Length: 129
Image 1 (cartoon, rainbow, N blue to C red):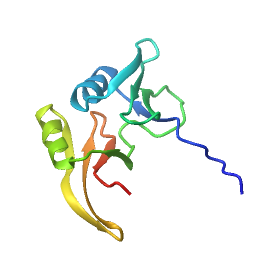
Image 2: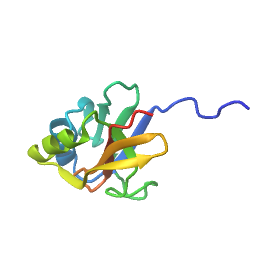
Image 3: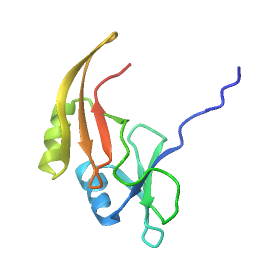
């Protein structure tokens, strides 16, 4: 069977306040901002070691999709989630679930959950498989 999905181009989030978001993703997480369009209220970030983009914009009235603050389940790789959480807190970020060990059939790994200013949640994990 021929694959329908051939890759992942971007992950897009709806946001409320571009200024707060830029501070979080750029200064707290340290992602490289590729583009900011003030008029369109759109921001694009590069994800390290990936061609996938992280894009976001203010949700327009009547626009389909998830409301700001309702995204979860996106996993960011961090070689040391505990150290990453300490740094995120130092930079003013929010830790929703502190680092914890998770046992899986292929081994154990650390994971934590962080949130952006809108409440969108992301997992930090050192899982490699």
